[in-house]
Image 1 (cartoon, helix red, strand yellow):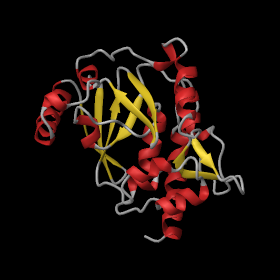
Image 2: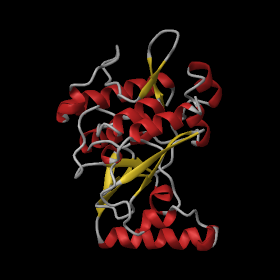
Image 3: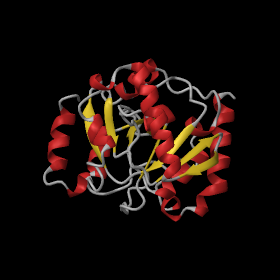
Image 4: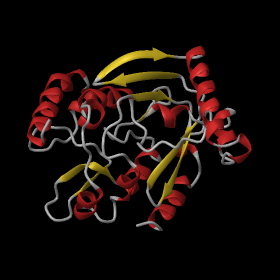
Amino acid sequence: MNRAEISRSTKEASERWIEEFPKVAAMERDPRGLPIPTNVSYDSKNGKPIFAITNPIKEIELFCSQKCAVTGTLLDTEDVWFVTTPDLAFVPFGLLMDAPMCGEAKDFTLRVCPYFGIRNYDRLSDKQAKAMAPKLSDVSSEKSAQTPSEFVAIKVRGFRGEPTAEGMRYLPSRHYLSVEFWEGRNCLRVIDEQGVRAELAQGRKKASTICQPTQWPSWTKMSLDGSLNGHWPWAQPRMKEFLLHEARKFA
């Protein structure tokens, strides 16, 4: 698909699904009618939203206020999701790159966003991203320019966030409540409990071939042993101020 075809496909998918998700339907929209995620960056020259580049400062303000990164609405602790790839979700030292969202935003995003739904979709190049938002585009450098073939949506029991030079990174409790496997805008299967444990066991096995468990980062244990269950950034005193301070070091 060329850019015009991708834009048309995205608009058609949005029009098809948007009324199914009231929180998304209430969002501000761009001239094409596409909902604008709350955490995106804006072009400093023309003020237009840059859908491919998120703003880490906005992300911190949102999740530390218990709000969805996409809709900006209040998050229910029983409905906090991350969208990522299987290697990051199940390998113990995988850190997630996309901010937490509500179930409605997750369902809409995976059905509409071209990055998640169109095979061989090309992201912005580093050069393009830096030209549009120099201070906010480093996050693009670690992401493959071409979309992966499969994504997973994970419902978490808790998480913590950390600013880095490449953007926000998220460490979830890997006691996932549910995991959905998506490909080409379709949810192929859903697992919970026993299935999640089996996937995580495979992830630990894979991680051991990369490096010995004794060499895994110290925070890996926290992600696996349940220490992060019930750990929500918005419930941690002065967490917002601390993370904003850390994030501005990389601005």
